[in-house]
Image (tube, rainbow, N blue to C red):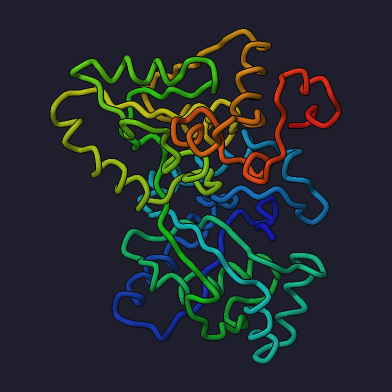
Length: 333
């Protein structure tokens, strides 16, 4: 379940405990400019392909979601706030809310649609002094009041823990310190480019002898904008490279076919993207020998990087000739 940002482009935060002096300061700052903080918000920072009250996400496009999420973070910063993403177990929360205020749950159903369930995600802009442990008591009443039409004083906020809600601060791709990316295409010489560039004394790769899946693609975890912890960890890991004036590169030949990854990389200032192209028939044949060929010694082929540990190869479902590519068995592989 995603937030209906066209009606209210803010996120959700839940009451985690009683107000403290820090949360009281957060509440005072938030209340003083609540309308502005609600304006500097956006759609979820995590992309999911699913229906939102009858609207298919893909109809808006990854590009549209990426732009909205990016703008939400940047506009929040310009306003002097900090941007956060939550992940809320909507089923657990409504179950607890129903025991406190059944009318509120009915209002939720009107706002989100009947049968709303699963994980709810959203971006929320909060005052600079707010932290993840203080956002719940500040934001939740105003947010649900905006969605449901109830007065914020009438919103019951049941106590929940981290098993129901996870709150993480967001950053922006423009803060990632990276000079170039080898983005594809696999089986077109990306390994040769990688190894030859590594010979230059002023070039360093994030992974010296392998592909890097830790930050983009799989490591990106479907994020339209990154977590602050992700960006800080990446930059700190290679701070010495930057201090020495060397260029930092990342190689992952699957980036070219991952829209989330290349939309993220496009927002990094000054980054250069290297894409190797080659004869498509030759690439098809190389892919076949890598993923579907019956190697005489599969263990040795896997060790040398001449074969991929695909489920088909590991269970012996393979072919001895590339002529198999012309059969129906391999047309979808």
